[in-house]
Length: 108
Figure (cartoon, rainbow, N blue to C red):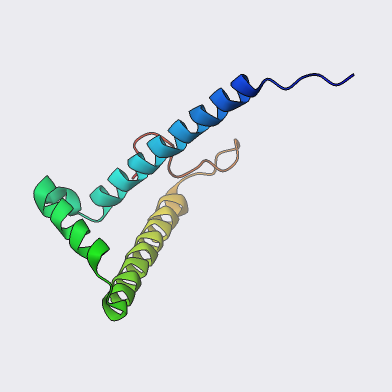
């Protein structure tokens, strides 16, 4: 005979996962604001800029912003790759295997 499903427990697990995803999204958005240097803006300025961007329907502007954002992320990844090359060139090799460059704590 089949074991009955515990719908309440499944629902609770799904709600917890949704909360974790929302928390992670908020954290990543905050990290993005900091990485882009937008944390120097006031909350009103940042909110106003985001509202203006969200309301923009002009495809040309949106494409330009998308290209600029892609360039930003590519330049960041190239900078971090070249920095890790500089760090590993002069550093002795550890026998414990490769260590991640950025951990969960404090990584932007």
